Each structure stands twice: as C-alpha cells, then as structure tokens.
Amino acid sequence: MFTKNSRTPDNTPVEAPKVAPAQDAIRGAATKTAARAASIICADMKINGSVISEGSLQIDGIVDGDVSATDITIGASGQITGEVKAEVVKVKGKIRGSIRARKVELETGAHVKGDIVHSSLQIQPNAVFEGQVKHADDPLRETGPVAATEAKTMTASSPSPTAFGISSQPS
Image (cartoon, rainbow, N blue to C red):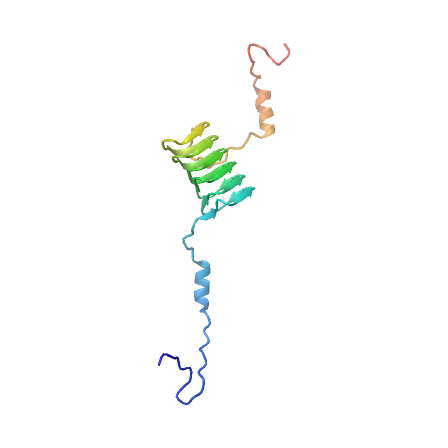
C-alpha cells in the first residue's frame, strides 16, 4: 500500500533520470553577490596577528593585532590589542589601541584605552574611555609620517625651536 513501485507495468526497472545542473545556474550562483553574514571570532579563539575582512566582523574572542573591516562589533567578551579600522565600530568589550572609523559607538560596559579618530562618536553611560578624541571628515584616510627627506628640509629651512631659552645651535 505504501511501498514505492520502481517497476513499469511490464515489470522492467525504471532508471532514475540523470540530472545535470544547468550551466547558466552555476554561472549565476558564482557571480551573484549574496548578502554576507558577519564573520565571527568566537569567545574561545585567540588570534595573534592582523585580521582583515571586506565585510562585517563580530569579535567575541581575543585579537592581538590590527583589525580592519567594513563593520566591526566587539562583543562583551571581545578584546583587541591593536588598531581598529572600519566604517562603523561598536564596542561592548575591550580595546587597547586606536580606533579609526566614520561612526564609533562605545556601549555600556566598553573599555577603550587609546585614541579615537571619527566622524561620529557616541558614548553610552558606564562606558570607559581613556585617550584622545579627534574629529575628522575622513577618519579612514591614512596620515602617515613625514618622509625623512622632507623632515630634513623643514628643519634646515627653519631655525630649531628653543626650550626654556636654551638654543641647541652654537652662537
């Protein structure tokens, strides 16, 4: 009654149809930009080295190195020692290092020890922050050190500053 009959009426076995995926479907799936889920660094993970992602990143573990992504969330158990760089950074855990982001949110329970360069900053009650804050129109733009040749040119063209009336140049 409930058995599946795999024979035709003349009692010859029925062969299962061979299904080959359509080439268009394979190409479409490979080129389709699907919505990505956040990459997660779990609470039981420790990473020594930099982490770079082109998408969202959830950090609940420990990262000893720089972190760069589009959107970074540091969970309550998350800890980062290094520079954090993203469009949006939400902190519930601990960061020991600088943050460069367009939007920074320090949520209740966050501990940040380092400088923040931002376009928008929000600090909720009971978030701890030790460092300097600088507003920038484009906080993600690199501001590198002055080249050695430029530094020599600048010091050679202008007299060196004096400290407490003592000059380092002979008179």
